[in-house]
Image (tube, rainbow, N blue to C red; front, top):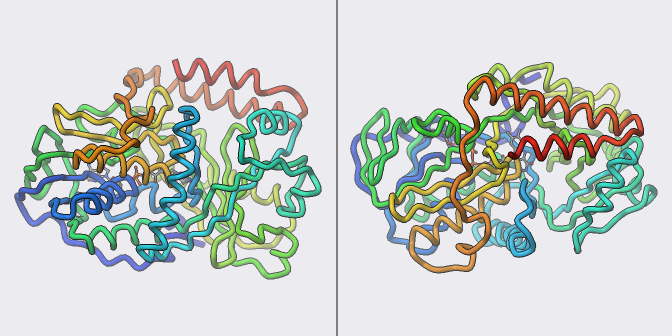
Length: 434
Ligand SMILES: Cc1cc2nc3c(=O)[nH]c(=O)nc-3n(C[C@H](O)[C@H](O)[C@H](O)COP(=O)(O)OP(=O)(O)OC[C@H]3O[C@@H](n4cnc5c(N)ncnc54)[C@H](O)[C@@H]3O)c2cc1C
């Protein structure tokens, strides 16, 4: 079994890129080569092909959440910014599909849709109350015909959502960025960001504009320590399942799946016939430390495999071949944002709270329009706004988050026992976002 290496990393061949060779002068520096940085570069080069764009990446392309996630490309954000934003996010998944086709991005993309299951009365009530205009409610029999999981009372079919192989998507966008003239330096950690100047371990780069695309890792940049907190999400993958197992489980269209518990879980049927399944961890490390130990914590990833086997007891005897984890970024107000600063020419996008696979594309497009000065309606979307205020200092941050997380777990336990949990959780949710 592979501990700490994701299933996705096993599926890509990574050719290292050289670090920054010394001081340089370009038009735009992008810090971080995850989806946010890569899509931003790609859109700048699409809109203004002569722009000199340089990406500086501390580790390698797709090292962060972009190379390790659940592969749900959704038309949803952690915060509901209203109808215009929803329309833009739906169109955004279409735009990703078009980019995959036009640029030949080999990333196992499929417009699979998503099945959000109700597995207790509380989940059913909440899902039915939150149905979007395009969502389809499936009753228990209809839902079970698509996904044969335990305790199904019904499911929402969300048609927009698409499934991807996360690491392949990152590698492929990097490939088209370089083909369009962008330069990527790996193994190059940025230590300081100022107006028109980015300092690294290997030299200083002067530039017109800077984009900070470092998501959870932003907490390690001077001056940004409290602008996000890093939270962990942990995943497991099974060995490839047999045709008989798939006939029993369903997911014939590779539909993404979850149930509506508060502690978020998520799964996909991979292109090579495995189940990749994960869950948000309740873990938060004091002073926002990002720890490999926490990413690979067997107690946490065991929770993911326990829930997977609860959903599908027919998996008994199936081997778990990979366990891994990663960090996602959460701003104080839990609202993802694209923050444009024309005065300092230092821009930033992120705080996706674990919903960034598709949203990063729209963020990148928006940053590219701001940077090139080519007007577009995306610049007027409600998430284009100043960054949230900071999280409190420790120990308040640690205590507040851990208490909140425990309340959400308790709310799930109540709902699975047939008791109302949502009142407790919405109270805690409102307190957490204060
Ligand atoms: C396990 C897991 C599962 C998830 N599942 C889903 C999902 O199914 N659907 C969904 O929508 N979202 C999911 N997410 C969230 C999603 O993956 C992220 O929102 C998204 O990938 C963020 O992309 P990003 O480019 O902003 O950040 P990242 O991918 O984290 O990239 C940031 C990059 O910046 C680099 N960096 C950091 N500091 C520096 C520095 N000082 N100098 C240079 N480089 C630096 C890092 O090495 C990293 O490569 C998941 C996240 C995790 C961890």
